View 1 (cartoon, rainbow, N blue to C red):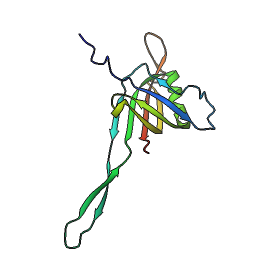
View 2: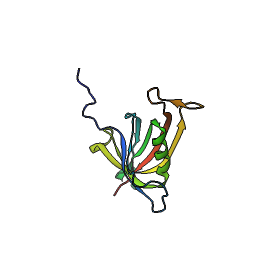
View 3: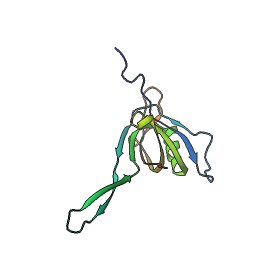
View 4: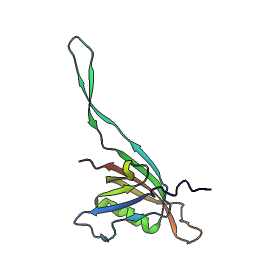
Length: 143
C-alpha cells in the first residue's frame, strides 16, 4: 500500500534569526522534530471599514487581511524543548508544513511553552529520552 505522507512536507522550524543579545547557540537555526505531525491551528481574519451612507445602508468595505495567528501543539524530546524555550530570543523564523500555502510561512514567535508529559517525566520507550508537550503561538510576518 502506498504511503499517503510520502511526498508531504514534515513540520520543522528553520531560518531562525536570533536577537543580537542572544546568549545561546545561534549556529543552530533549525529545529527538526522526531514527532513530525503536531496539531496546527490557524486563525485568519479580514480588515474592514464601515461607511455610513446618509439615508441609506451601512457599507462595509474590505481593506486587507490581518496576519495569520498560528497555534501549534505537539510532542518533542528534551533537546528540542530547550530549543523551543530559546525562541523567546528569536526575531523570526520559518515554519514548514503542508498546512501552509507554499509549504512554509515566516513568523514571529509570540509565545512558547514546554511541559513534561507526566509528573516525574515520561520517557520514549526506545531511547529513554524525556518527552515534553509543547505549544507555540506565532504571528505571520507580513511585508
